[in-house]
Length: 131
Image (cartoon, rainbow, N blue to C red; front, side):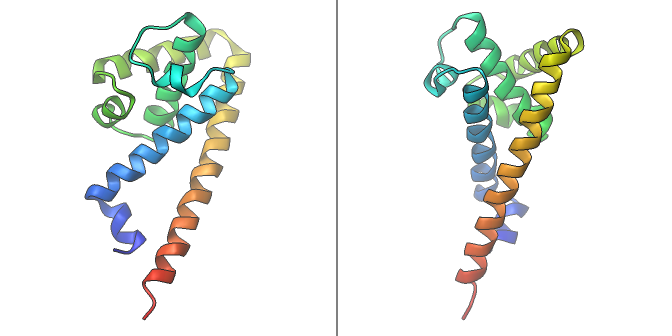
């Protein structure tokens, strides 16, 4: 299967969405100095961990436009929880200009990282498509 077919849908779309969410978790964990395992945890956590998780969710859902249902499945949360997390982050952005700037930087860095991953995948796929 070529990379173009992967991007167009099917099971590979799930891999793309999962890659986006894992990258968002890693970036949020680094920004909030929180363990990724705590962000992925199904248990309720302290406020800083909860905000790190909400930020990762927001970056995936709002930043990359992943559907709430897909984002929820990949973060182990209900889609209504995804909406709530995004709203919490948006509310904080409106009241905290430093947080807003940090979030913009995280989003920009993530876009560069994801673009690099996709370019590598395209290059590998192109090598495999050769006769």
